[in-house]
Image: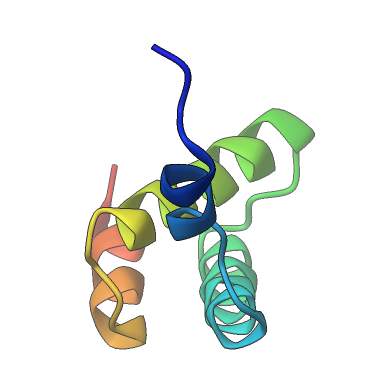
Length: 69
């Protein structure tokens, strides 16, 4: 099935959402000393996926991802 333009538009993050995800990424990458590209890509993917699945609170994202092992 090909996603409709409406479904695709619902997955696009606005500037404020991107900024929130970036802050979470920066904080988690620093706290966990993540430096390799594969680890950074995995972290970014987990942040965006969690956000798109409804975890939109910055503190909750931080807690989830810093405690994630």
